[in-house]
Length: 117
Length: 112
Image 1 (cartoon, rainbow over the protein chains, first blue to last red):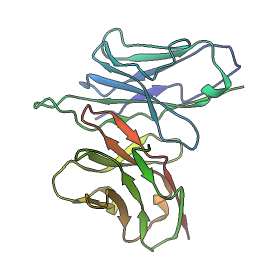
Image 2: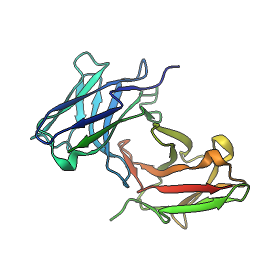
Image 3: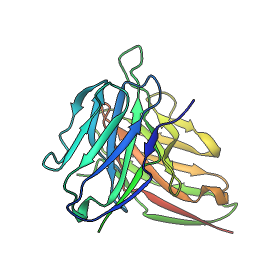
Image 4: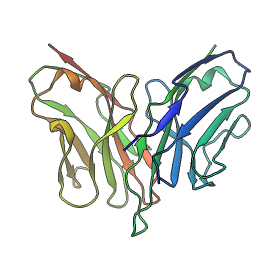
């Protein structure tokens, strides 16, 4: 089975510029997550989607970050304008709901490494 | 307070010797716990998971972990390290609402 796809793999931008990342989850996975992984730290959840609805965006810096999943499949994460502290790896993950209402484990994509200069 | 604490930021072992990566968690309930591995420029890959069944969990590539409730620990071990085990390892706790809390990670280097 194909894994979670992300693009681009690397991006370098100047501060105050905007950038967008794309994620295609595993087919059939209704739940999609975006994480931010700063160098030397574990990933931190930014936003969680269930189909095309937002379940949790409490940790998303909404003044500059936005995310959408319009058709409940692919998702984009945007930063506008970028700051130096946004330099990180942005990981996308997906999972699905099991019959009993629980979720299976999350499957992660390779990530997009963002460098803000 | 840290939900998941990985006690070693860096572990260095010789090829063929045992590997031990230590993880402690805090939880008011019996959690689901995972170990993920991240090779350079690759995504996180699930090594193994504990979801309240057997306390000794076997994973891929010869890794295993033991859940010890009395010690609130979930240490990862492998009897014999291979060069390909060099990577970053994350201990992860999943809460009742299925949110993941990651430890800070342990970098493993394997000496030839």
